[in-house]
Amino acid sequence: MKTFYASITAAIAFAFAAPAQAVPTPYAYPGIESSVQYDFFAAATGEVLAYFVGSDADYTTRIALLVNGVDTGIHGLDNQTSVYGQMLNFGSVNANDRLVFKLINVNSPTVGPFYSDKTLNADGRNHIYAAQYGGDSAIPAGFAVGFEDLPNGGDFDYNDENFVFVNVARAPSDVPEPASIALLLAGAAGFGVSRRAKRAGTK
Ligand SMILES: [Ca+2]
Ligand SMILES: [Ca+2]
Image (cartoon, rainbow, N blue to C red):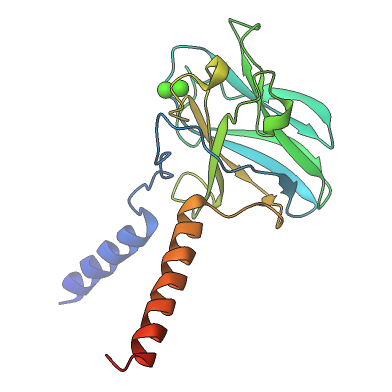
């Protein structure tokens, strides 16, 4: 019996120690330019970390960071050689420092660079999509960001190099996701219908 309980305990411990590896959600509307702008800030005073998620791209790219408009000079996580969960430390920043991520094309330097801030992109296109990520066994919780590496947005699949950035917050003034707006509108419309129905005495 002791052995039975021991193996059950071991099985439970294993289940909690090695959860299934979740992967940040891919961009939901490939082919369509993301309309959501992201203004990133340091959530707290401390290190900003980048974790490599994956890449579906022919170009060779790396990630870099501007803090309050100044390039840290640190870049890495080559998309052709990095593995899931590989980390790059951008060093320490102060809470509320403005963060702009920059995708560098290593072999074709005339392509890009592309920034998380759309207004800095030479083509004026939005080259990232982003979403909160809860973390997994290899990558902590943070902001999942996928880059589009083609000039003018190319195929807009936003999977050309993907990361999770840690110690990053989004500006509260940013516009909500289109999906959230649609839900809000649907909710408001439903509320209006039920009020009208009540007034008309049909329900
Ligand atoms: Ca791709
Ligand atoms: Ca692409």
